[in-house]
Length: 187
Figure (spheres, helix red, strand yellow):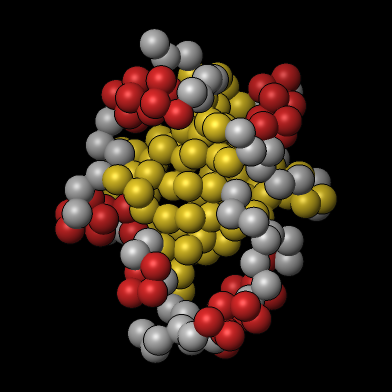
């Protein structure tokens, strides 16, 4: 991967960080730890009904358990691999163990943003689309920024009926009301 200079980073014009992603071995145990440490309650789990994920440009089979919670306006995402092909999460688990995986930026026009990253010479590692029971569609793309920052960078866009809706706590509460999200209540 080519070295990214500060002017290139500025040209990407990213919004404020919206998410901190953490890969865990046991999501329920992790919720038990992170809830009191970060004062997060409740945690939310989207009801994912369909996914299309590519790792290294090739389609993969992957089942995840994902829980999100909020400390202030920052979303914390816990990711547990249930089963599947080699992927960006098992890479971390196999090399460093569980822990901080990525920082995420909630964006609009994700296709344009992905192209901007590629044009800047930042390698796309994994990307995909997740669809929930209520028809929310989340597109995501992970980029290799490990040499520069020590973690992966993720771009995220969630739409509902074609409208960009973001990933705020309010959207999670709405998702709970319409049956698209469940609340995980842990200790």
